Amino acid sequence: MANDLRVSVLILTKNEQQDLPGCLDSVRWCDDVHVYDSGSTDDTVAIAQAQGARVTARTYADHSAPFGGDEAAHRTWGLRHIPFQHPWVLMLDADERCTPELMQAIAAMLASQDGHAAYRIQRRDHFLGTWIRHVTPSPFNIRLIQPQAVHYERIINPVTVVHGSVGELDAHFNHYPFSKGLSHWFAKHNGYSSFEARHIVDGGRTGDAFSWRLALFAPDANERRRHQKALYYRLPMRPLVMFLGLYIGKRGFLDGRAGLVYATLRAIYEYMIVLKTEELRRP
Image (cartoon, rainbow, N blue to C red; front, side, top):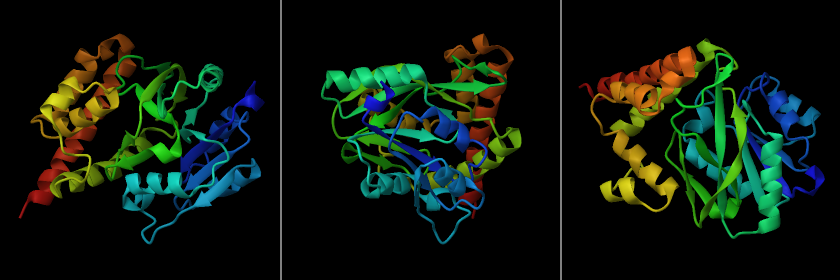
């Protein structure tokens, strides 16, 4: 069945020599794997090439800035310029793994041809040796797409904009966000929080305008989440809102200690954004 999956794979990387081999192993069924790199200084590119992936490198003047400082533009550029062999593309990060269940769901989708332009897939985050089933903020991500029907908005943590209907696959992929340890997670989110703060102070870009009506009643779940995200960044006491929303609202307490720690970490990340926003606005 795997050889019949006419789907390309796109893996975004920067200094992913630790996690990339496992991700590539999980998509060995694919005959068109692309690694889209943004200036790695480790062995990421060499590993990708050694395992037969096609590498597209897009570097920037400031290599310290993830994705050149604009993740949405970086992702959209990849969709427009990478020569995919197949009409469908599965998007993965290096710390994510395709599953046999996902392969079967993709095969069923290709056979049905139901007319959607993209599909949401459940992401299962793992932390402290367990699947944190409840505490994850957004467990469904748009990851199977037709490239010409998709673009991204927002300079960091971008939203996926689909020009067409979005379906949902009854399958999941696995995500290991703490595979490099807590120090790496803090360093990464320290950088991300700086981008978020700058984004807020600059007034945001396309994709940050919101409507109360659409945030609550938009028929498309992706559009609903986009407006909810824009609304969320205007709330007071966001760190507390994040913690209570994840730990109580989403029943993160059912995930045991992992749920408590994860909800706390997400609240800390929000507080970093709040403090850096205040710092940037200070005369």
